[in-house]
Length: 352
Ligand code: HEC
Image 1 (cartoon, rainbow, N blue to C red):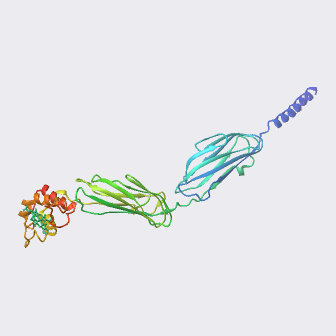
Image 2: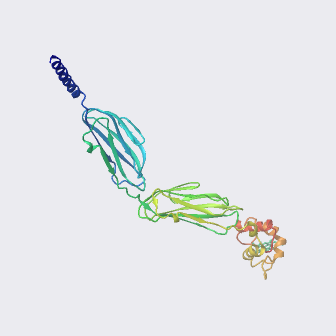
């Protein structure tokens, strides 16, 4: 009996002790919560949006081992993730400890892709019991809009499709904004092929730094021009292409390039001949004295002009009004006419 009493006493004091201990070791509870905001509910595809994830511990206990899972869906490409406390590594924000009543934020910048999904989910977890689970998930979605689009076109023409080798041609490049909105960052590239050397490039607006014409901004419906003067070389290629690009989306890429070409005429084929160059020149300038019916040597006869060409060049090269100057009593021939006579000599005094 004494023994039994003793054991009851021991047991009951142990139970009291047990419950007292149990009360001390009761699991701490926290109410963790997470919320999200976004910088724009309808961001432009291709732009960056900022999501701000806010976590807080509403107590009553201190929270430990707090993590937030934040996996970006396919509609975004992560640019940066910056936590106010803790660390970020591949879609997990390790917050760590959060005192009762404290909070923290994660700033996530991401690029908006052209296709979704666009719904972001943040899920918070901690080591302690959280009886209020309803605020442990925050979902935020955006409805992206297409970037502004327009249509830029470029056309290129050449001043002469059959230029003589050694002469110059002019390529006219015209860029046009066919759209209603302003196009920005308009740029045209025109790489001259090996068949030409650049002489000059003159833009109506913007700047030229070979081979790029930086046009800049173009309002809807406006156009701009670039004149490229180039010398034609003996061997090609002669195909010249201009290509336009813009910052905005171009809804029609097919009209962004334009090519023009030349089929140069060999300088050999353009030799000065008596029949096509010299005779017409002498007949006009030296009539009526030196043509059939006139009183002096007939320059409209190939053999005569050929045999006296040095004298002819000598006479027409004199100072106007001097003793032997020809045309007698007339006006001095222009420099390019005298050059034709000289080239006739160097080309071999061909009749035709
Ligand atoms: C208004 C008449 C007249 C016109 C026009 C004229 N000449 Fe003469 N030319 C003469 C006379 C007169 C002579 C002879 C006197 C002399 O030699 O200066 C002559 C002589 C020459 C001679 C010298 C012939 C020789 O055998 O030495 C040459 C060369 C000549 N002319 C070239 C020309 C040329 C080239 C033109 C046209 C660009 C021209 N002349 C226009 C009147 C003319």
